[in-house]
Amino acid sequence: MSEVSINIKSQEINYPIIIENEAISDLKEKILKFINERKYIVIISSKVEKLYGKNLDFENKFVLKDGEKEKNFKNLQKILNFALKNKLDRKSVFVAIGGGVAGDISGLAASLYMRGVDFVQVPTTLLACVDSSVGGKTAIDTDFGKNLIGSFYQPKIVFVNPKFLKTLDNTQFMSGLGEVIKYAFIEKSTKCDEEFNLINILNEKDIFSKDEKYLSKIIEICIKLKKSVVEKDEKESNLRRILNFGHTYGHAIEKINNYKKYTHGEAVIEGIKYVFKIALEKNIIDKNYYFFAMDVIKKFNFRNIPEYKKEKMIKFMLMDKKAQSGKIVFVLPCDYSTVKICEFSKDEF
Image 1: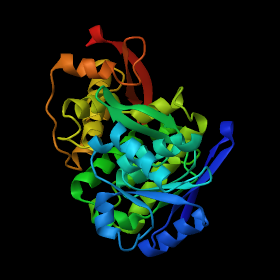
Image 2: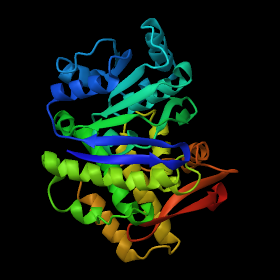
Image 3: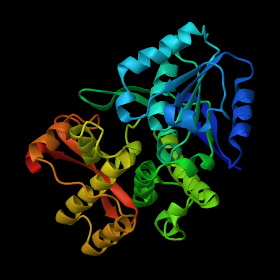
């Protein structure tokens, strides 16, 4: 077992992220121990319920369908009504078990219910383990874009169990890998006290073997890198924006395809390729680093995504929540594992 503590000094918030390769039934007991006889509801992904429901036989379970489209106002209201029907009070607990969709919408619901109740995260996908379960971002999507309605609301505890990843399908595993690669390219800019050289670690072993010790190591590194950023900038006023490396273009791809054709991680990888191209064209990086980065990405055989009409992409990128004063914000590579934030007007495209 390893434990990473997140400490948000500005709000005197401190919570543990526990990474442990244990039996799923043992995990249930740990969650109940944390709840400590308080009232609770569990919001669980339908896939996780199907695979692990017998080992996670909690009372008061709300089964949430999988897919980004489920992160909507209607389901948010259903979760809140479910909590009200079960007579949860201000000392009650919301538990999210699933991927980023379950975590995002459950966290937002917990932040709203009676002005905020305790929230427990149990990420079951690689993407959620390394990214969405850490840092307190909660949100739902709208017809206008992704994650536009949300709040910053930190969990009280996060339980990470690599055993869930054994049954994760390849599409969702690749989606999480997209975020892992993002961390490799921004590592130095996270200002983490530890140096990991994640790009090299990704070459140590075949990540697709899903070796639990190796996955635990990768997950812990990504969490520590995000911890370094989140502790310095909880609400994305400056440093935290680097976590959006590849996301401006990636979110536009997701929106154009109505969140159906490509996963989040695939879209982010295409966004990373795009910003490397911009950085090369503007002489921010040299050809050696550009081709090195393309080789790193190529190794993992992500699907190629076609280019879309410039006007549509610009429209959606201008609607991105990071856009400011009519300018599109990109995080560009500028050196090995180092990035910087740049703004561009639509005319610069």
